[in-house]
Length: 224
Image 1: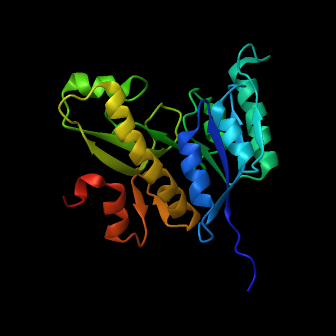
Image 2: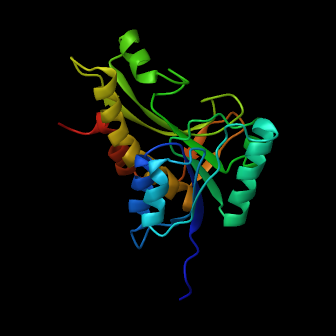
Image 3: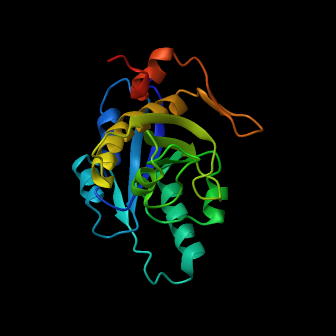
């Protein structure tokens, strides 16, 4: 029996890379259908770069500050790196930089992001405090395809986190982050298995997804 071809991932980060680590851990399982071929950061000192190197993954960084030619030229350089790596899917995992429309177009349907709110609510930055200020009873995270409009692409999956009495932005962020670490590797598995499709209205369907899959990534549905 021949070797199974795995989906090749380029993971883009700006910081410590905790979601990157969750994906690295998932990829270490023999039956996981994806592998990371590139870790990239726009911050030269991003902690996640070392996570990649420790896992024997190519890790590269290019500072965006003062890059000749501006955003378009910078994103073109990033795209070139991704293409050279052979990646099939670009995974934004705490990449705190808006990508250009040309970058989104180049990687259309091959570019995903995780956002720490239940989109379409609370787009952009400062979302944990915004959720608390709005008095919502549930928060969470969303994995979605990236489109030119920020945090507006087709939603693939979400995980729900209750807002508890006494929460501040930090406590809520940590509880949501724990679910990000669960949901992102699961979505990548679905994509690698060819189970994710998007219709003309931008509605995502995951084929043959057992209810247990959704319960596992949606703790609000779990008993107890």
